[in-house]
Length: 278
Image 1 (cartoon, one colour):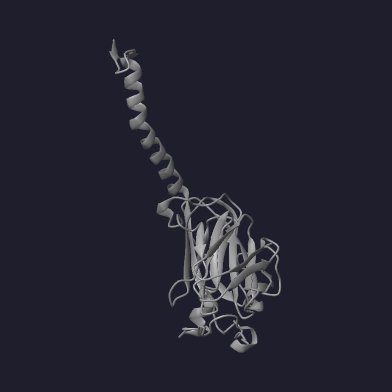
Image 2 (cartoon, rainbow, N blue to C red):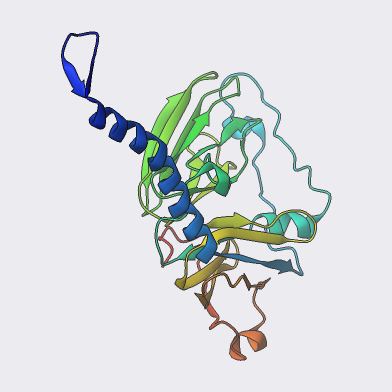
């Protein structure tokens, strides 16, 4: 038996039914595979503890030293809790495994792009996190020129001078720590943390808790990084459906490090270094 389409040729009814069945079954099969992955995946969470202020105050020359164009008042920090601010500057990510989650349900769908504005002669925010292959936009909101650049090994660039209302976008193909500055305003400093995959997090709220969802079984290294203290690494093994808690004390307690616990490793790489995460 066959049916006639509008173009005038006949299509076997069996073929039509097969195609209709595939249209119904394919989404079901995809959902089943996704469900099986979620079933075996685990979540990694923990608490970031910071007991002292780590970030040094920036010393800014007077406007007359380097001001070009209209006077722009220097923006001020609005932090009310210094330790909470330090916790928010800690970035956690995974090394090893696959590329990580990319679906909207993972909460990482928009993580490939970030924005650092130039406003009040500051970078805002001064720290963003993206996975390798992601991009960062640098819009200029000041009525003066800025020149964003980086000499860091993972990604070096110079965006040149550009005025208010213009923006430049940079793609970061390799993981690592990228320090960003402005050639026209020495006080301006920012950081782009480029992770090897989409499993990354930052401490949230006053409790300093973080969470990475949907991690597939395997061996990983959990990395915690702060601009002042450098890298802290802990080796973990994720098993099917078994969530893990991995806490970090920043800076690390030497006695706790010598006692072991997830195989702690400390690597000091502060703002004076332009290398990639090792």
